[in-house]
Figure 1 (spheres, rainbow, N blue to C red):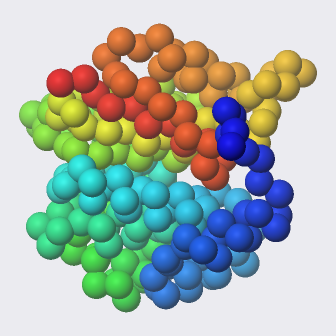
Figure 2: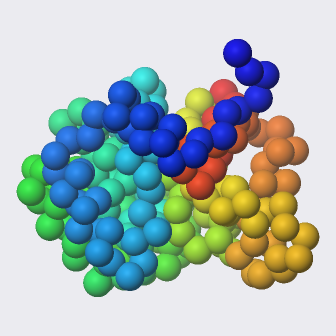
Figure 3: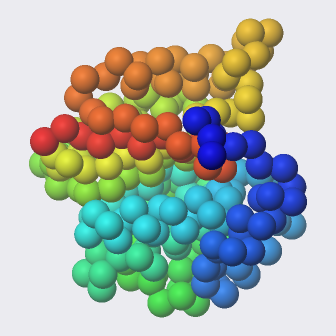
Amino acid sequence: MSNRTISLNEKLYAYLLKVSLREPPILKRLRDETARHPKHSMQISPEQGQFMRLLVRLMGANRCIEVGVFTGYSSLSVAMALADEGRIVACDVSEEYTAVAKRYWKQAGVDSKIDLRIGPAVPTLDAMLRRGEAGRYDFAFIDADKRNYLNYYERLLRLLRPGGLIAVDNVLWGGSVIDSRDRSIDTLAIRRFNKTLQSDKRIELSMVPIGDGLTLARKHP
């Protein structure tokens, strides 16, 4: 028994994956390919992808938004959990990284569910709001440049329906959030983001110690 979250060493983490991970083969292939990429650490962990699939299914989500695609593991995870009519608007700035994503989306047969929009996400989200899409989305995931987290969050909160959920990656930032000597722009941005959400009365909040820390923010009805 424990009254605090247990720490995971390598052996215990391996056990967690062994007894709980149900990773579809195509996601495993994508993860293996991305592991050879110079920026492979940008990919979410497999148990986080599985957790997000569970969240999407529990919510019965149909309309989703992703900010930060990289090689597509998170968007593929979510797309595989959606019903046939479900859709994801996927925002990224890199043609190179998302070219990998598009290959796997097609192989998995979910490419028709994913609307990839290349370009800075803030203008993309603003355009969606101008088109009257506020309140139409069920689920959103943020995993992009940290200095814009609050900008993405504010726009996504408007795009979500009441009861919709925003999931935000990297909120523990490798432990740097508690290192007072770290004054880097990204670390300061994550600290500011976490502090802002802690007092945001528009949401229900939970920070989950999975992967590099995942914040869940549910928009109040």
